[in-house]
Image (cartoon, rainbow, N blue to C red):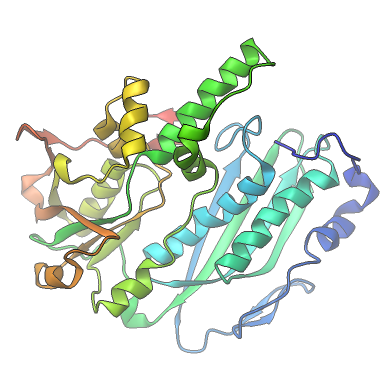
Length: 351
């Protein structure tokens, strides 16, 4: 969604590739000591001294990962950064730099890309990361965004997906399901608009859900919080594809099983309410919705007292022996096998 679509439009060809790069990145300047050279040379130069380097890349494709009929380009730029920073925080690291590459068709004027990059700039400022490079090229159709995030962590502070042990506690930040339900609201309103372009939607009651979908926040606060609490997770992952998928990833990597308790899954009241409106089961949405970008991790039971009562953290289950499998314990005390039904970009559906 190009917010200034009625204003002047500058064709991309008027600037050319290098002129476009200069134009879009003119407001980006290094903030961090580790950035020796950023944009403007053949390669960026970084100096992390004795810390471990973390790298993560994600590709966002129009029509697969986002719909521009209801996604503001500024929000899209912001979200593209969040998706990648979340992976760095999931390794218990500190995000430091990003690169941004785009492929764009000539249906987008320069002003549209200015909006996209304003979101990237805002995210980099708020999360204190430097934009140190990237690329632009043409696309025969649509918009493609690839962001690579770099970060650092002390060698003994890095947390991997493997490392969980039987009897470890399964801990979650924040709440789940809001991003998926925000998407359902937006898709519904898109269909309403198709049928009646003059319809004026009242989305006030869905503000939290829509914001979680269009402009999510990565959990930058969690690694320093855990350090302050003197807790090092035994394993960790971010919630991008749905809770059940991420638990299964941790279990397979750590060669353990898990029991997840339905009654412990944190849900915002807005999620419960809108699930009822859409006649959807809120637990299923939490398990399979995805795009929450919360952090899921395991800790030793010895660390429970350190996190007990913390408003940012919820114990939702525990790990078991691998042979016991992965299960959801329902409110009715039924033991159901956990199934990965999160987002599958290869099928462009929930599998």
